[in-house]
Structure formats: C-alpha cells, structure tokens
Amino acid sequence: MLCNTNLSLALKNQLGKYGMLNFTIFQIKILEKQFENLNVNLINNSEISIKLKCPFCSKYHYYKFKINDFRNTKMFIGGCENLGLTIFFIGDFKKVSETIKRHNEIDNMVYAMI
Image 1: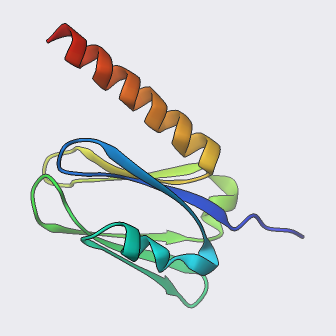
Image 2: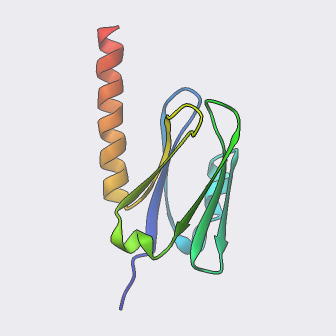
C-alpha cells in the first residue's frame, strides 16, 4: 500500500499572517530552518512532536500527532491554549492552502471595513 508522506504546515506569525511550507515526513527538520521558535521531532517513526513558542502569549505550546492519523484526517489545527487563537494548520496541502486562502480573504474584508 502506498502512503502519501507529503504535508504542509501553515504557521501564524506575530503580525497575524500565515507562512506556509510543504515538506515530507522524511524532511521534517526543514521546518525548524524555515520557522523560528519551532521545534519538530519525529518520534519512533510514528509520531510528530511539535514545540512552538506562541506568537500571541509568548509561552511554549506542545502538540503530538500520530502519522497514521494523517491518512484519515486531512488537516489538524493547533492553537493557543491561553487565548483560544489558531496558531497553525498541518496536513494535506490542498486542505491547508484552501483554509489559509479563506482566512486571508476574511482578514482582507475586515481590514477593508476598518
């Protein structure tokens, strides 16, 4: 059975804009080079562990995802536990990019109303 190992990560910065990067499970360390304040590890080739300094509350948040769960779920969302704000999306490229596009459109409408 073939398994798609391509994923995307969209991470929100302090200005509220998302930076997005496509990667494979085997290139997971490339995320740390692209995004500062992010530590990503592959644990026993079965889990992804993420340690992230929150751009909003400046505290560290920790997340774990099983690699097999990416086969069943198109996208996972990580957020700030203190403020309830979304920090990142990880998963299928198409799903993550559609979500980021929608968020950017909403942000642009809000800015236009202000």
